[in-house]
Image 1: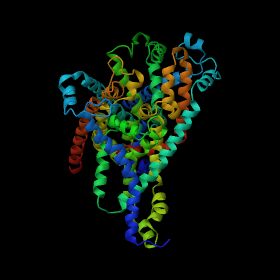
Image 2 (image 1 turned 135 degrees about the horizontal axis):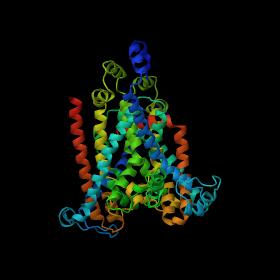
Image 3 (image 1 turned 60 degrees about the vertical axis):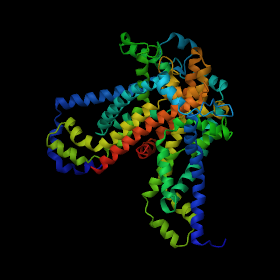
Image 4 (image 1 turned 45 degrees about the vertical axis):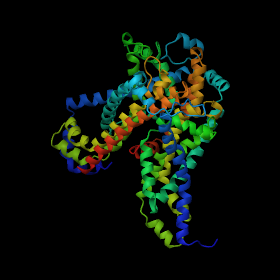
Length: 297
Length: 293
């Protein structure tokens, strides 16, 4: 970033670098080769699936997987996937679950962070300790007993199961909120207090706006997670009518044979495309959100 | 509304703001953990009203009488080996991308992309990719490596590595990003100085880069260890656990939800939990030492 600022001081070095040494040339070529190889490996499976989604049954049977489809406007597979699978319901559920969970975790998480970071009260240390311990317990290990809790609450087979778990069992986001608020000076909220604002007003008018960067980090991390998660929909909402796009694809792949592979690939493109579009548009925010949020993860 | 006195208001805000998160914490995290330990001491089938206390019988079954059930734990070794390789690759790519060569932004995005894609979608894509005469074979044919195609998923020796490959494919970019983030902390003037001194790129990496990012790499290694104990999605969705690819989590969920041996499954989960906690405790100890030094 600031690397270019002090270039005048390093003129001799620059001159020496101009003359490309054979060793340097070799390594640069090598690095590029590795990058191109790795990127090709990343893209190849996706590209083949993308091609397949436009192929006719005959092309699927006769041709090679790497062949381009004869006609990129052959949308028959997409039409059939929409006709055979409850695509609309799954997408609606995914949006509903994601948005509701995000609202809940944002409100609950920032409130908890406000109280835990800004107040000293009996039991505060115990609460912090409880969160740290619980965060170390991998969620997947407690599913056996969590399932019974969810049964008891009558939530199994309802999308509310996903909502309460994506928001209520999300300790990592809460931790992000607490750490973020801890780094913000108390001056602003203390002066608001002196001016006579109530604690509720301070939370709503001062703390919440201040936490926007942390909220956007959590929104990014959680949206990616909820959209892509498989284990919770698989356990708690096995019926697509109540579930997210993960279950839509899982069920579809169960039903489909190799004869309808192209239709399944169309379904995959349908599920992946929104993510790719959002990823391309928001890549900078996603990347920095990931880097900020991941280190504690 | 009459103004409350400050003390009452304070108490009210603490209680009202904490009641929801604490209820959720108890209900969905603490209570299930306690229940898990209790279930593991019973022979409960998940349906009947009464749970018979059997003491440590489930643990005895798992650790002494029927070791078969612990066997999937061995598969974790493959994923651990894979994640060490993944960490090495991620570090390599992060270091060369950090040199801001032309196109490095594009490459970084490409390698990271799989991480943001739906788990089921990419798993189905991979299942087809690795089939006999699937995408991988076709690509190899295309570039003249047709003679080296294998039965990637059918060969019981190879299938585990194929799944490790799928796992690296999915998570490499994520690790790359974290390492890349850590690299931003390396002071650039040190590289400049080293270059003037005539240090090679490899020397710069060993003496400047590595010491700075070592804590992050250590943390990632710990996370990788924990992660390899908890592998579920990739093998479940690609092979369904066939051909010896069942992981410990898959076995646990199978015991609980298919064979209805909730007691036994709970004991398996507790054993895994103990393993994970052990790794975390080791990490904390090492980390605290590192921080003090």
